[in-house]
Image (cartoon, rainbow, N blue to C red):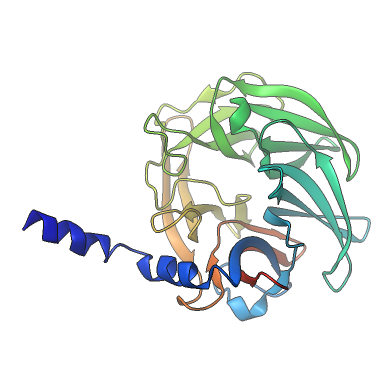
Length: 302
Protein backbone atom coordinates (compact mmCIF):
# COMPACT_ATOMS: atom_id res chain seq x y z
CA UNK A 1 0.00 0.00 0.00
CA UNK A 2 2.82 2.39 0.90
CA UNK A 3 4.55 1.68 -2.41
CA UNK A 4 1.41 2.50 -4.40
CA UNK A 5 0.99 5.78 -2.50
CA UNK A 6 4.54 6.83 -3.32
CA UNK A 7 4.04 6.07 -7.01
CA UNK A 8 0.81 8.05 -7.04
CA UNK A 9 2.48 10.99 -5.31
CA UNK A 10 5.31 10.92 -7.81
CA UNK A 11 2.95 11.33 -10.72
CA UNK A 12 0.75 13.98 -9.14
CA UNK A 13 3.44 16.40 -7.96
CA UNK A 14 2.87 20.08 -8.80
CA UNK A 15 4.28 21.19 -12.12
CA UNK A 16 4.61 17.57 -13.36
CA UNK A 17 2.84 18.37 -16.64
CA UNK A 18 5.31 21.15 -17.37
CA UNK A 19 8.29 18.88 -16.65
CA UNK A 20 6.97 16.19 -18.99
CA UNK A 21 6.30 18.76 -21.70
CA UNK A 22 9.82 20.21 -21.33
CA UNK A 23 11.30 16.71 -21.72
CA UNK A 24 9.32 16.00 -24.87
CA UNK A 25 10.22 19.33 -26.46
CA UNK A 26 13.89 19.44 -25.38
CA UNK A 27 15.32 18.35 -28.79
CA UNK A 28 13.70 21.39 -30.37
CA UNK A 29 13.28 23.96 -27.58
CA UNK A 30 15.11 25.08 -24.44
CA UNK A 31 14.12 27.19 -21.46
CA UNK A 32 15.75 30.61 -21.26
CA UNK A 33 15.33 33.53 -18.86
CA UNK A 34 14.40 36.69 -20.72
CA UNK A 35 13.36 40.29 -19.99
CA UNK A 36 9.94 41.73 -20.82
CA UNK A 37 8.87 45.39 -20.89
CA UNK A 38 5.56 47.24 -20.83
CA UNK A 39 4.89 51.01 -20.80
CA UNK A 40 1.32 50.51 -19.62
CA UNK A 41 1.33 47.72 -17.03
CA UNK A 42 0.23 48.18 -13.42
CA UNK A 43 1.13 45.70 -10.71
CA UNK A 44 -2.52 45.35 -9.73
CA UNK A 45 -3.73 44.43 -13.22
CA UNK A 46 -0.78 43.15 -15.29
CA UNK A 47 -1.50 41.14 -18.43
CA UNK A 48 1.07 39.11 -20.33
CA UNK A 49 -0.14 40.46 -23.67
CA UNK A 50 0.93 43.99 -22.65
CA UNK A 51 4.62 42.98 -22.51
CA UNK A 52 7.27 42.97 -25.22
CA UNK A 53 9.93 40.24 -25.03
CA UNK A 54 13.52 41.46 -25.18
CA UNK A 55 15.28 38.55 -26.88
CA UNK A 56 18.81 37.76 -25.81
CA UNK A 57 21.33 35.83 -27.93
CA UNK A 58 21.01 32.05 -27.79
CA UNK A 59 24.28 31.64 -25.89
CA UNK A 60 23.14 33.51 -22.76
CA UNK A 61 20.21 34.72 -20.73
CA UNK A 62 19.18 38.03 -19.18
CA UNK A 63 17.37 38.17 -15.84
CA UNK A 64 16.84 40.36 -12.74
CA UNK A 65 16.15 43.58 -14.73
CA UNK A 66 16.64 46.89 -12.89
CA UNK A 67 15.75 49.85 -15.15
CA UNK A 68 17.16 53.36 -14.75
CA UNK A 69 16.38 56.53 -16.74
CA UNK A 70 19.04 59.23 -17.17
CA UNK A 71 19.51 62.08 -19.69
CA UNK A 72 16.50 60.94 -21.73
CA UNK A 73 17.96 57.46 -22.11
CA UNK A 74 16.74 54.18 -20.70
CA UNK A 75 19.19 51.70 -19.21
CA UNK A 76 18.53 48.17 -18.06
CA UNK A 77 20.90 46.61 -15.53
CA UNK A 78 20.69 42.82 -15.68
CA UNK A 79 22.26 39.58 -14.67
CA UNK A 80 23.83 38.25 -17.87
CA UNK A 81 24.64 34.54 -17.78
CA UNK A 82 26.77 33.01 -20.53
CA UNK A 83 26.15 29.27 -20.65
CA UNK A 84 29.80 28.61 -21.55
CA UNK A 85 31.04 30.36 -18.38
CA UNK A 86 28.44 28.87 -16.02
CA UNK A 87 28.24 31.99 -13.85
CA UNK A 88 26.56 35.36 -14.07
CA UNK A 89 28.00 38.83 -14.38
CA UNK A 90 26.33 42.27 -14.43
CA UNK A 91 25.69 44.02 -17.73
CA UNK A 92 23.88 47.19 -18.73
CA UNK A 93 21.67 47.32 -21.80
CA UNK A 94 21.08 50.71 -23.39
CA UNK A 95 17.63 50.68 -24.97
CA UNK A 96 16.26 52.50 -28.00
CA UNK A 97 12.87 54.21 -27.86
CA UNK A 98 11.26 51.10 -29.35
CA UNK A 99 12.85 49.05 -26.51
CA UNK A 100 15.34 47.32 -28.79
CA UNK A 101 18.92 46.96 -27.51
CA UNK A 102 21.27 49.69 -28.75
CA UNK A 103 24.27 48.59 -26.70
CA UNK A 104 25.30 45.87 -24.25
CA UNK A 105 28.25 46.36 -21.90
CA UNK A 106 29.65 44.14 -19.15
CA UNK A 107 30.09 46.38 -16.10
CA UNK A 108 30.95 44.00 -13.27
CA UNK A 109 32.53 40.57 -13.44
CA UNK A 110 34.06 38.41 -10.71
CA UNK A 111 35.35 34.85 -10.39
CA UNK A 112 32.09 34.07 -8.56
CA UNK A 113 28.44 34.42 -9.59
CA UNK A 114 26.82 37.88 -9.67
CA UNK A 115 23.14 38.69 -10.15
CA UNK A 116 20.31 40.98 -8.96
CA UNK A 117 22.00 44.39 -9.62
CA UNK A 118 20.08 46.48 -7.08
CA UNK A 119 20.96 50.11 -7.92
CA UNK A 120 20.07 53.25 -5.96
CA UNK A 121 21.00 56.90 -5.62
CA UNK A 122 22.22 58.52 -2.39
CA UNK A 123 23.41 62.11 -1.99
CA UNK A 124 23.93 62.51 -5.72
CA UNK A 125 25.95 59.31 -6.12
CA UNK A 126 24.90 56.03 -7.76
CA UNK A 127 25.46 52.74 -5.95
CA UNK A 128 24.90 49.07 -6.65
CA UNK A 129 24.48 46.05 -4.39
CA UNK A 130 24.73 42.95 -6.59
CA UNK A 131 23.99 39.53 -5.22
CA UNK A 132 27.31 38.01 -4.11
CA UNK A 133 26.19 35.04 -2.04
CA UNK A 134 29.01 32.92 -3.49
CA UNK A 135 31.43 35.41 -1.87
CA UNK A 136 29.56 35.14 1.46
CA UNK A 137 29.05 38.87 1.96
CA UNK A 138 26.99 41.90 0.92
CA UNK A 139 29.21 44.25 -1.07
CA UNK A 140 28.56 47.82 -2.18
CA UNK A 141 29.83 49.35 -5.45
CA UNK A 142 29.95 53.04 -6.38
CA UNK A 143 29.48 54.35 -9.90
CA UNK A 144 32.53 56.22 -11.20
CA UNK A 145 31.15 56.87 -14.68
CA UNK A 146 27.52 56.11 -15.47
CA UNK A 147 26.46 53.62 -16.66
CA UNK A 148 29.45 51.39 -17.24
CA UNK A 149 32.17 52.02 -14.62
CA UNK A 150 31.63 50.72 -11.09
CA UNK A 151 34.17 50.24 -8.32
CA UNK A 152 34.09 48.32 -5.07
CA UNK A 153 33.27 50.73 -2.22
CA UNK A 154 32.95 48.56 0.90
CA UNK A 155 31.40 45.50 2.48
CA UNK A 156 28.11 46.23 4.22
CA UNK A 157 27.74 42.87 5.99
CA UNK A 158 30.45 40.20 6.07
CA UNK A 159 30.17 36.43 6.54
CA UNK A 160 26.57 36.29 5.37
CA UNK A 161 25.19 34.06 2.54
CA UNK A 162 22.71 36.71 1.38
CA UNK A 163 20.63 36.78 -1.79
CA UNK A 164 18.76 39.57 -3.56
CA UNK A 165 19.58 42.39 -1.14
CA UNK A 166 16.98 45.16 -1.35
CA UNK A 167 17.00 48.53 0.44
CA UNK A 168 14.15 50.74 1.61
CA UNK A 169 14.41 54.25 3.07
CA UNK A 170 11.57 55.52 5.26
CA UNK A 171 11.88 58.86 7.11
CA UNK A 172 15.67 58.74 7.21
CA UNK A 173 15.85 55.15 8.41
CA UNK A 174 17.33 52.57 6.02
CA UNK A 175 16.11 48.98 5.96
CA UNK A 176 18.02 46.14 4.32
CA UNK A 177 16.06 43.07 3.24
CA UNK A 178 17.96 39.93 2.20
CA UNK A 179 17.12 36.30 1.73
CA UNK A 180 19.59 34.23 3.76
CA UNK A 181 20.59 30.71 2.80
CA UNK A 182 19.14 28.48 5.50
CA UNK A 183 20.89 25.70 7.41
CA UNK A 184 19.00 23.19 5.26
CA UNK A 185 20.56 24.75 2.14
CA UNK A 186 17.42 26.43 0.87
CA UNK A 187 17.79 29.87 -0.74
CA UNK A 188 14.06 30.44 -1.14
CA UNK A 189 12.32 30.65 2.21
CA UNK A 190 14.13 32.79 4.82
CA UNK A 191 13.93 36.62 4.70
CA UNK A 192 15.99 38.68 7.16
CA UNK A 193 15.84 42.38 7.92
CA UNK A 194 18.55 44.82 9.09
CA UNK A 195 18.45 48.54 9.76
CA UNK A 196 20.78 51.56 9.91
CA UNK A 197 20.67 55.35 9.68
CA UNK A 198 22.92 55.30 6.59
CA UNK A 199 22.85 53.01 3.52
CA UNK A 200 26.68 53.12 3.39
CA UNK A 201 27.00 51.92 6.98
CA UNK A 202 29.07 48.90 8.01
CA UNK A 203 26.96 48.54 11.17
CA UNK A 204 23.61 47.06 10.19
CA UNK A 205 21.58 45.89 13.17
CA UNK A 206 19.59 42.66 12.77
CA UNK A 207 15.86 42.90 13.39
CA UNK A 208 14.80 41.01 16.55
CA UNK A 209 12.02 39.27 14.63
CA UNK A 210 14.44 37.65 12.14
CA UNK A 211 13.62 35.79 10.05
CA UNK A 212 10.77 38.21 9.40
CA UNK A 213 9.33 35.88 6.73
CA UNK A 214 9.89 32.13 6.68
CA UNK A 215 7.81 30.87 3.80
CA UNK A 216 8.86 29.45 0.44
CA UNK A 217 5.82 31.16 -1.11
CA UNK A 218 6.78 34.73 -0.21
CA UNK A 219 10.20 35.22 1.41
CA UNK A 220 12.71 35.90 -1.37
CA UNK A 221 12.82 39.48 -2.77
CA UNK A 222 11.66 40.12 -6.34
CA UNK A 223 12.67 43.74 -7.02
CA UNK A 224 12.59 47.23 -5.56
CA UNK A 225 10.17 47.99 -2.75
CA UNK A 226 7.92 50.83 -3.88
CA UNK A 227 5.15 53.15 -2.75
CA UNK A 228 1.56 53.01 -4.00
CA UNK A 229 0.01 56.14 -2.50
CA UNK A 230 0.43 55.48 1.24
CA UNK A 231 1.07 51.75 0.82
CA UNK A 232 4.56 50.21 0.97
CA UNK A 233 4.67 47.32 -1.53
CA UNK A 234 7.34 44.61 -1.39
CA UNK A 235 7.57 42.31 -4.44
CA UNK A 236 8.60 38.76 -3.55
CA UNK A 237 9.01 35.40 -5.23
CA UNK A 238 6.72 32.41 -4.92
CA UNK A 239 9.09 29.44 -5.23
CA UNK A 240 6.63 26.80 -4.06
CA UNK A 241 6.13 25.15 -7.47
CA UNK A 242 9.48 26.03 -9.04
CA UNK A 243 12.28 28.52 -8.51
CA UNK A 244 10.89 32.00 -9.19
CA UNK A 245 7.51 30.64 -10.27
CA UNK A 246 5.44 33.80 -9.63
CA UNK A 247 5.53 37.29 -8.09
CA UNK A 248 3.72 38.36 -4.92
CA UNK A 249 2.97 41.99 -4.10
CA UNK A 250 2.97 42.33 -0.33
CA UNK A 251 1.78 45.38 1.60
CA UNK A 252 4.07 46.16 4.54
CA UNK A 253 1.72 47.24 7.33
CA UNK A 254 4.18 47.33 10.27
CA UNK A 255 7.86 48.27 10.02
CA UNK A 256 9.85 49.37 13.04
CA UNK A 257 12.82 48.25 15.14
CA UNK A 258 10.68 45.71 17.01
CA UNK A 259 7.97 44.48 14.64
CA UNK A 260 7.42 43.58 11.01
CA UNK A 261 4.19 42.58 9.28
CA UNK A 262 3.17 42.19 5.63
CA UNK A 263 0.18 40.84 3.74
CA UNK A 264 -0.04 39.69 0.15
CA UNK A 265 -2.47 41.85 -1.82
CA UNK A 266 -1.75 40.85 -5.44
CA UNK A 267 -0.26 37.91 -7.31
CA UNK A 268 1.15 37.60 -10.85
CA UNK A 269 1.73 34.14 -12.26
CA UNK A 270 2.70 32.59 -15.62
CA UNK A 271 0.11 31.94 -18.32
CA UNK A 272 -1.54 28.49 -18.38
CA UNK A 273 0.72 25.48 -18.93
CA UNK A 274 1.35 24.97 -22.63
CA UNK A 275 2.12 28.64 -23.27
CA UNK A 276 5.81 29.38 -23.80
CA UNK A 277 6.23 31.62 -20.70
CA UNK A 278 6.78 29.39 -17.66
CA UNK A 279 7.87 31.43 -14.62
CA UNK A 280 8.43 35.04 -13.54
CA UNK A 281 10.42 36.37 -10.57
CA UNK A 282 11.40 40.08 -10.83
CA UNK A 283 9.34 43.28 -11.00
CA UNK A 284 10.68 46.83 -11.32
CA UNK A 285 9.32 50.11 -12.62
CA UNK A 286 10.79 53.47 -13.71
CA UNK A 287 9.05 56.42 -15.38
CA UNK A 288 5.95 54.32 -16.02
CA UNK A 289 7.89 51.48 -17.66
CA UNK A 290 7.48 48.07 -16.03
CA UNK A 291 10.19 45.44 -16.44
CA UNK A 292 9.80 41.81 -15.46
CA UNK A 293 11.61 38.62 -16.37
CA UNK A 294 10.36 35.17 -17.28
CA UNK A 295 11.52 31.77 -18.41
CA UNK A 296 10.42 31.33 -22.00
CA UNK A 297 10.41 28.16 -24.07
CA UNK A 298 12.58 29.09 -27.05
CA UNK A 299 13.23 27.40 -30.40
CA UNK A 300 16.82 26.07 -30.47
CA UNK A 301 17.31 27.05 -34.10
CA UNK A 302 16.02 30.61 -33.80
